[in-house]
Image: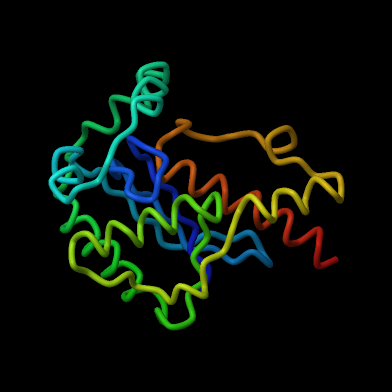
Length: 182
């Protein structure tokens, strides 16, 4: 599988937002099958030591989220550089990093923030920048053909858990992909 769905939980929404959780799953959009999964929580303190910048509106938003989502972020957080190295190892172990297509929810969010965090820690992202893919664009295409994943596809798991969100996104990107290819 050469498609990797990413989801980040952060304490900001800018390029240098502090990452607090990373979820990823390999998937095949032509079948909807998912493969290997990756999940790691990241210490907010370590993200901020690398000069990541939180914003108040995101912190206030997190305060309004459910206990399951908020409490899951406290489970075994790792230092940012270690979490990113583990994600790189996961990508390299499961695909050819020259060809992996990395999906993020928004052209300016997941992939951009993750790439910035790699840079802040002195590491290189394990995929080519030209292989960034945008979930929001394919969702708009889905709406044009009458499929809205927000309404048409039930969520399984805990919302705002990075891995559960990544799996859900992979499922609805695959569903739209298949409808478009028909």
